[in-house]
Length: 295
Ligand SMILES: [Zn+2]
Image (cartoon, rainbow, N blue to C red; front, side):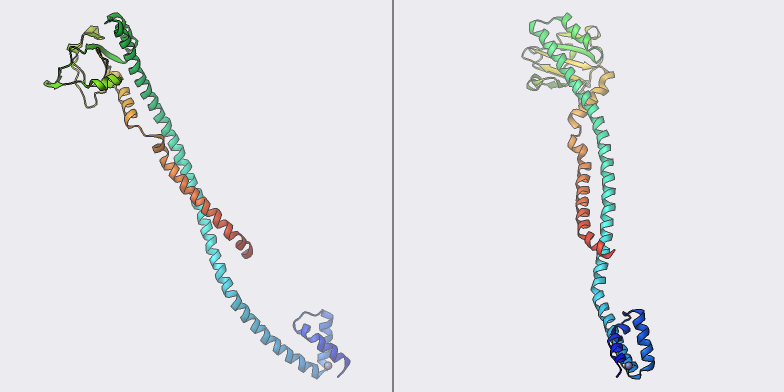
């Protein structure tokens, strides 16, 4: 065996793996062309290498299978993250939309509340001022003055003596009912009341001191307001033109929605949006490193 054969055989593994330099490869080629023994060994080594390579490929494929499963899993996770992202933005837009809507509702409700407050305040003022006059005596001129002040809204203002109407009959739609006044309620403050017959009044101001129209108690009787102390009952009627405002005030006071009700829906949506956001952030955190690996 020539010296060259030793060198060629040292080079053969890298030559077959195609890892040697071009010069070395040319040298091996030239030698093999002239040396049968080395040609034989090269053939043998190549055959072994091919088997190894096939084994490697199968092994790699076996190794890649779970990786592929993992990749599929994380692709699905990526899809889920994308879904959460879309769900979050949609939910956020809907929530903001409902918040804006609720704010406009609140604005309208606050206007109604303002009306209700001013109606309540006016009731108080009329009663306080009238009772103050009555605390000295039944001064018609002073009561006229109070009535004039509120004549935009009031039709009549009447004073009854509690001595004279402890037992009185209510003439309603032509039928006479015995009727007792709930004094304890009327003493607490101005209340909506079944109208006491104005013919029993000590004094009526407005409409020249006489009530010609027929006052029929309606379902609410929110058109009549009364208040009592030990001595007197003051009762007034609202003008028909002002009745809508009184009705609105009544609705707002007793049936108006609370702020909680107004903002209930957007607040629930906010909770849902936050929940989706939390899930999205969590999902992003667990898929991010894997995404970097897969990309
Ligand atoms: Zn040789």
